[in-house]
Image (cartoon, rainbow, N blue to C red; front, top):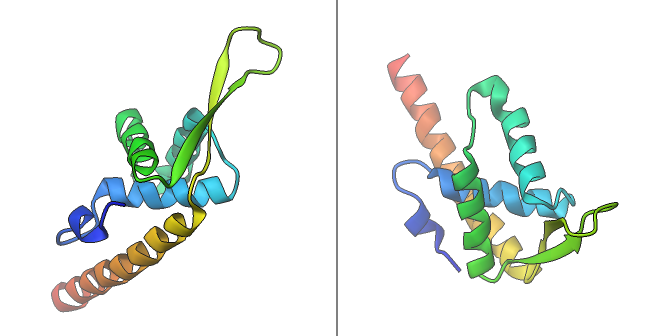
Length: 121
């Protein structure tokens, strides 16, 4: 599994942030790529963050490579040949560990941002 220290520097990097949301959205059964992308864009639009297609899919592929998620191909309802790729947990315990590590990193980032605002504004 990808270590969060490799995913972070001064502040959390976009891919680690997206992976966190992919895990949570899979927990909440928002399970296919385009739906994940649309939901992220909708939820973050008010704060000016618009994740791009390639970063969302790279985050999903990282989670697959890490053994956290797996792809399941299903025929699209009412279509003979069209498939939809859904994401399910391969290793839910690894997903929970990743989220826990990221929570610690997010807390650190939040403290850095709060300090910068307090000290400079």
